[in-house]
Length: 548
Ligand code: GLU
Image (cartoon, rainbow, N blue to C red; front, side):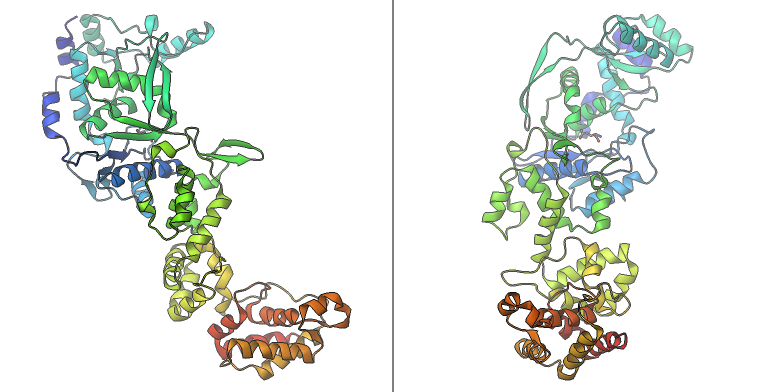
């Protein structure tokens, strides 16, 4: 067979050579040991935790080595593509502070190795497709859907492996005349790889996360170019990562079975193999067993979930680091205030079987992260979140930034800061009562206290209340009122003989708390009253008194 003639027949428009491509995408000038890695997501409209895990891993590996991280949009599957998905993707990755040095952006490409959208790279793939045909390593296949289905049914019936291989590879050795006739008849064709692999053999391979592996060789003549001339993932991966000079391919381990094919492709194309890090799938506990996170069952798989709920990005990063590197938590304990990026990330510390994701732990991490922020930061983040997801709340916060910040300052700082908020969407329930428009009587006062009990205590407080009091004076007054009205101020004595008292000082505080905040739980009452000011405190006490 004259492979050159076949190549010319299939790709008459291709005049560029692989050498031209090498010249167009020269080696990067980077210091010794710098990694080049990438995110190569498909724009399906659904950006998930797996994408983020992959992105963080690539980001850390490249940036901590002084290398490059780029974004390549793998939009070769037109069937799966959703309008606006590329923008959603880019916007989401930006939200999580994955900073790309180059690649696709909403305003087009940035960098010297583009285009960074695979759908725009067809002429580049065709140069290499032509090369493979010239070398007899690829050939056109004109099989129809029906023929392929019949093949599959036969394989199923005979309990044989599925796929286009061996005697099923019916276009593998057809004459150029047959090819010409099929083209003349207008039959669509795909380009297939001519595999020389044997499933009796194992490929030995070292993965940066999984370690030493032995995987069955590939004997299938996989598709390289689809009938529209667009490449499959496999072919595009080999060509793009070669020309973009990727040194480290970090991807999900669902690609591991394709690795033998990728090794074959690199060899056939004369490309140096990058290093691979295959990340295990994220799992969660379901009862007492582990399972993969599922799009259908687990809303927390979607990255939109964290944004809508208002998980600080810093908390998500911090938590993902704890599940990605087994030594991260120890490092964090030893370096509580260090920047996350000072941690030496390593693929060796990743669990080959995949990490276990636990939203409760993420919430705990988030509470800690938020408790270390100052009030101004918390205010800015909550406002930012509310502007997108709760405009009324945002308007209230923005109407009085000083008061809002003062509220977030309550219980903040010091050795044991309060940890009331795990996510920004909880801020309103936590502090909305400061604003009259959100204030509601959410919790009632225990019915063991009569209306008169509550009334008398609140009236007494109102009579003694002075907003200028120091905290001790303020509390002494409450104790005095309690004592005068027959409530215990010594909790031990109260617990020993509760029947001797109307209640305790804690109950009197509770009356006040409910009157002023509408709730049984709130931040420190003294601070709350100070921020609210005399007018509002008095108005709320009076409002409750009116109902008694
Ligand atoms: N587009 C592929 C995916 O989304 C990328 C895999 C890779 O990073 O090479 O799974």
